[in-house]
Structure formats: C-alpha cells, structure tokens
Length: 338
Ligand code: FES
Image (tube, rainbow, N blue to C red):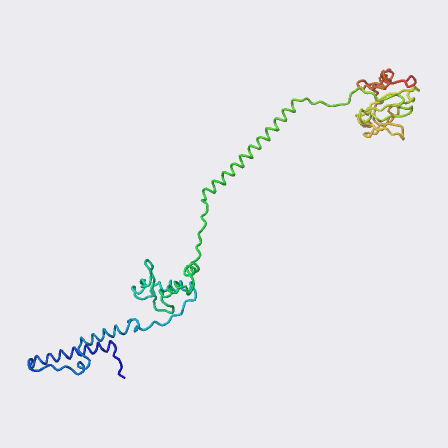
C-alpha cells in the first residue's frame, strides 16, 4: 500500500512542478510556440495541476482534523503533588531563566477568563502553568486558595512601639505626681505635729501627788510594838506604835526619807530597824539614827485623831527631833488616851 504523502512532500512536489512548467514554457517560447502543444509531465498528469494539489492540501487539512493533532504532543509532565508545589513551580517558571526576554514574558492563556493572566510554562520538569491552573480549577489537586494560602509566607506585622517621647512624658508625669503627693503628705504630718505641740503647750505641767492630808484608819489597827508599811509606797510614811521613846505609849508617823542624802530606807522586821540601802545608815524603831552617815533622826509628820476617831496624817508639817519638835502634840497621838 502506497504511503500517503504528507503536506511537506506535497509542497516540495508543487515547487518542483512549478520549476518544470517554467522550464517547459521557456522551451516553447524559444521554439515553436503556436504549433507544438505543451506536454504535461507524467507526475502532474497523474496527480493533477497545482490547483488540484492545493485542493488536496486543503482537503488534507480539513480531513486531517485539528492541526494540533499532528503537533508532537508535549511530554507528559509530572503532576504536582500539592497546591504549594504548584505555586512554587509558578514562581520558578515566572522568573526569567536566561532565555529571550520575550520567552520570559507571561502569555495569556486561551482558557483564562477575563482579567486572569496565566504565565506560560517554560520548558522544565513540571507541566505548564495553565495546565496546573486548570487542574486547580477542576479540583484535582485541591483548592487553589488553600495552596496559595499555605504557600504564602506568614505576614508578620511588626508591633509599632509607642513613641519614645510619649513614654518618657508619661513616666515623667507619674514620677512628678508621686513626688508631689509625698511632699504634701510630709507637709501634712509636719503640720499635725506642730498643732499637737501647740495644744500641749496650752496645758501646764502638773505633778500629780497624793494629798498631803489623808486618813489611815483607827488607832486600834496599829498594835503596840509594830511598824506598818501599808502607806510607805503610796504616801511615803511609816506608822509606828511603840513605847520605847522616853517610855511613852505613842503612835506617830515617820517620813520614809533618809536624813543623809534622801534615799528610802527599808524596815527590817527581823532586826527591828530601818536600814538605808544607799550608804548603810541605820535607824531604830523610834527613828533615832544609830549607824551610818545619817547625821540626824528621821523626821515625823503631823498626826492627829480626826473627829470620826480615825487617825489623820498631815505631811505638810514636819517635826525634827534635834530641834525638840517631837514634843509637839501634833507630832504624835497618845495611844493611852485613845
Ligand atoms: Fe541613806 Fe546615805 S542616803 S545613808
């Protein structure tokens, strides 16, 4: 079976026939042009004239279907695995790779919608961009939006720091307010202290002392030969009932003040004497000094019987033995009469 000629073969034949006809016409013109008929070549006779050949070509073109069917198919590209891979391939294909500038320019694909630019795929391992976009649209490899979102680098918006001048101003205001409040607090405390001091100055310094005259009970409360220390701490006196001074049965009150330098002696019941702790002065029950540096006997204070029969002490008056004042009736109470 004869091989069907393709378009190239037919075109080469046409060119050859054209050359042959021109040669034949030249020969005829040079020889007898009117009487000698032009002999057509056998090939042209068998296959028709150039018009027929062109008609054949057109017929082949129409009968052969789409020319793209004769175009050598593009080698099958490896299908993209994920939208991220597709987007990476698009970026890599979109960048010029050293070829012609025109080749690097993006081309609008025939299947793209209005306003949609698709970058033509350069030669490489991956399929063309329009094919990958088509796959994305048909949902074969997932959502384009998801791929684009996953392939996009994370947009990190830097946090705009507050203006340094504003921060410094705010901290300065806070510091000023705190110092201002502290100053006012200190002023208030100082003013309060001054007010309290002035108020205290308005009141006199009064030494609160027990009254100089006070009652100490009935004479029967003080038996003969005893020294009572009941009012020593509170009123500074001893109440003595004795008959050792000049043989008289007397009750009297002695001031608990040492006649040496003013210390407070203690009554020693076992030794029956008053003993000063400061320098060792000693006094008998009667109040007469007998040891130590004390130069004179203890002093008596006034004692009397009140109208109610109670003994009443009067510390406002004192009686000194060396001056003969113990003979004063106000310095003792005769126990034999009460
Ligand atoms: Fe009492 Fe000196 S004060 S002995």
